[in-house]
Image 1 (cartoon, rainbow, N blue to C red):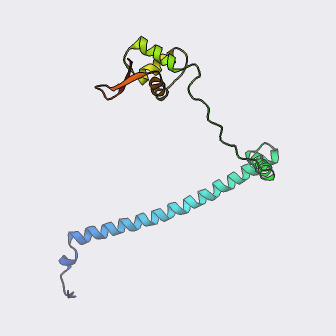
Image 2 (cartoon, rainbow, N blue to C red):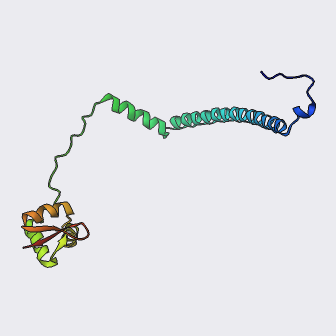
Length: 159
């Protein structure tokens, strides 16, 4: 156990480390007081803002064109009558009806070997928006053969 001798020298008590620690404690205490003052100011400002908003709401509802009044009537109106949830719309055909296996076959004749994205871009430029997934499906129906190119993409060609 460490014994503290009351007769220890003042040089030991006033080491640079002790002095630095005392200065640090003093600074921390000052910061704590400053934070407490800032919190009190913040609370006062929040009260002032809350009072100002309440005043604006009161003035708006008195004039008849305030936002809160409109929201309140909307909330009352929606609570009084129940609405049915919208049902999911039935899924239709995403690919235009004019894009068929024959169209994909014609594009393959024009372009030669090409990817689904290239075929889709050609058909889309002609005026019928179509995606690569639909082209892959239609290319199989058109009798196109598939091979994986050097770049890893599937390429379609006739024959």
